[in-house]
Length: 260
Ligand SMILES: *Cc1c(COP(=O)(O)O)cnc(C)c1O
Image 1 (cartoon, protein in one colour):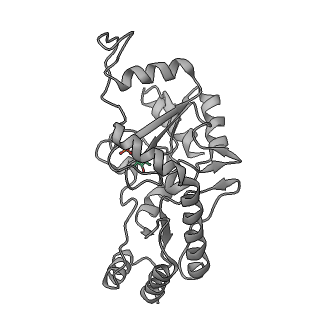
Image 2 (spheres, protein in one colour):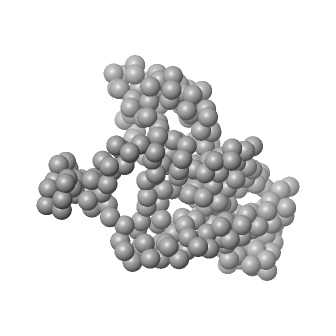
Image 3 (tube, helix red, strand yellow):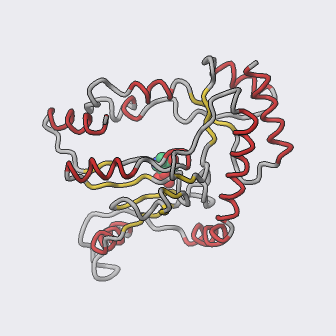
């Protein structure tokens, strides 16, 4: 509903919205049917940001094949990370794919020394591709391991903090395990965990529309109060496929003590 209001707010100021960029945050899919309905009604292109959610599914379909185009990231911190920078774009549109290949290599045309548009240096480094090929072989196992870690957290913390839930029809790759605290006090909670040797992180302390680069753009009427409240509220616990049960028990105990 706020997406429709946001598009209307943009149009009212004379802007011409071209696309919607839903973000599949923390490893879980956005509401793509809802987004597609708005995109169809408003005539907008959908670019899915699946940087955190490559490998996740939405109603039985893999992210990457749902929007007009989907971008993902292979930055080391992502579920499928290489050892430097990397990423990929997925689309079923052959013409768009050809344009993207050209943009990736300096706007390349018919051959190496023909340039038909302004492009980027967007090649995936061969060394990073080699890392990704090997990690792709164990990716399904790593997703299963992340899900086991998430289930252990949920069982142990469900009545202590607000734990993340999967929307119906979603599977997650658990890029982050992000919780909400019952009575605020995020800084004190982070400090208490740090004291017990448990690192935490805040994703993200600022909503997108609060970033300097975006602050002068219109937002949906009524603002984005949920987004703002959550960015003041959320904190993420350690999450990776190799978090063993004993270590996780220590983290869980630290959370219990810090909340008590
Ligand atoms: C990491 C991330 C990006 C950026 O990925 P890069 O590989 O740095 O371009 C974009 N969107 C989301 C949601 C991310 O988590």
